[in-house]
Image 1 (tube, one colour):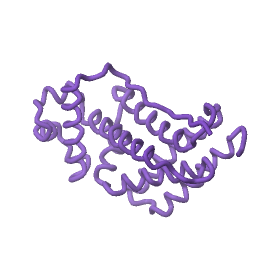
Image 2: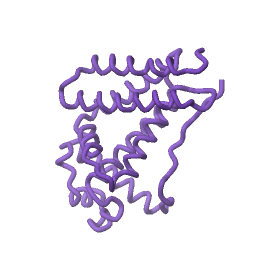
Image 3: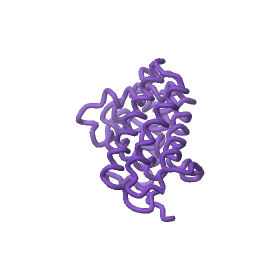
Image 4: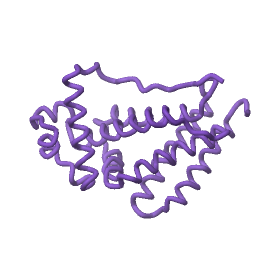
Length: 206
């Protein structure tokens, strides 16, 4: 069976090797600070010091703390995507594979609750100036879901609509769990339930 793989295309010109190394240090520092103290612990001056860059340099890469934390989420999702590709889900149906994949991603975030909270808060606070970065997070989430679906043909409009609903549900489930309003068990039920939309919108059920 053929594999329909979604790729996230870069929205800006490629960085030089030195610039990319600097960007990686910044993102690593951001994740480390958020892991220890959440959203409030990520202060631009502390990030610059931890990354070994000038404050002005940091602002050239990321104009605000929200930009930085949304980029940190992009980076975390990319790591998750790479890991999931190395060990794809084993479910028989597309719905089962997507549910397994999203729960694995959820558990990865669960291991770093302060970091997860900081990144989700940044997405919530993001205004129009952060739209390109937020769109990249959405595209990455879509790519993860489409890879898990393992489609032989390009997804149809109804399937893409189902993917968007699944994305919204996953994001909402993450927020309710972080706020203490949902258990992991409830999150799992919600994810498995919404993923059934995939099989319902499959034009050629297997």
